Image (cartoon, rainbow, N blue to C red; front, side, top):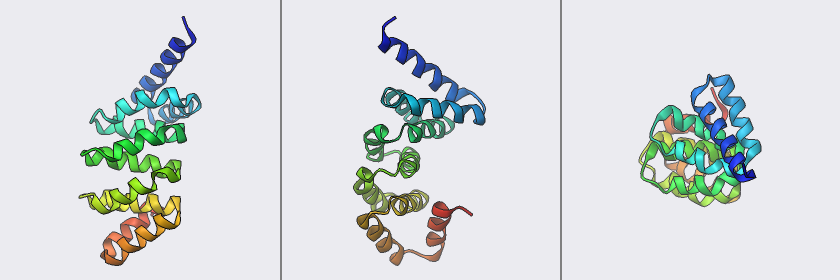
Amino acid sequence: MADGEEKQDEVSTHVKNLMQRDIYHSLMEAAELGKIGTPAVSPLMEELASGKTAARWRAVMGLARVGSPAVPALIDALKRDDEQLRTAAVWALAEIGDERCVDCLIENLNCSSSESCQALTAAALLRIHTPAAVAAVERKMQAADPEFQDTVSVALHGT
């Protein structure tokens, strides 16, 4: 078996385990996929796009562990119509913290129809903390009601 096929089999096994095992073992599988890196991005993005809520969140755990190589695919996910898909992608991008996603996150902050997605996006931008990211959140917060501001704070800092 060629090295590429072995790597594909390894990725497939880890993705399957990520989707099917208990949370503890899924986190372990996400860490293994993170070590694999780029070859794990496409299968994880397939799970993210599946439309199944549990699969999406498990897939973004894996994508967040992959890190920087997953950023272009996650940015592409922000451009889709599916609000839940975008929300999951925002979470992963916040975990990764790569500045390449700031412009797309700002667009998502200003265009998303979901207040929870907007709040999570604002928190992601604050975590990435570039001048443009912070300025966009400040503009949004000035126009926002106190409940939205509280939601952003919880998304950023926890309860």
